[in-house]
Length: 96
Image (cartoon, rainbow, N blue to C red):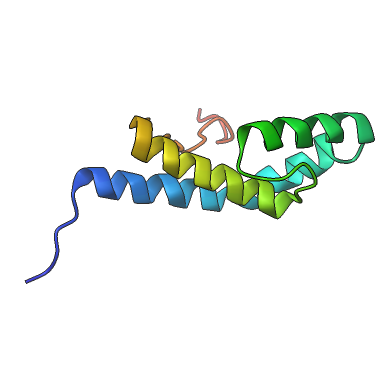
């Protein structure tokens, strides 16, 4: 007999998968928009070390892992609903 997963468990897995799938884009944005310059990079690191379980000199991998951990803890402790990405249809060509 197979194990049937609850809807809540499946949604949690989808949330984790959505965040993992966005990892490269998120890290690239941090590196390009924030960390390429010392002033915004310092601000990002300060805000991350205040909000996430990371040190002030954390790299982008540590920051992302801290973000993923915070997502999980919020879900467990505060029962914050998962955010699931919807397909982006704005890039589809217009149909006549």
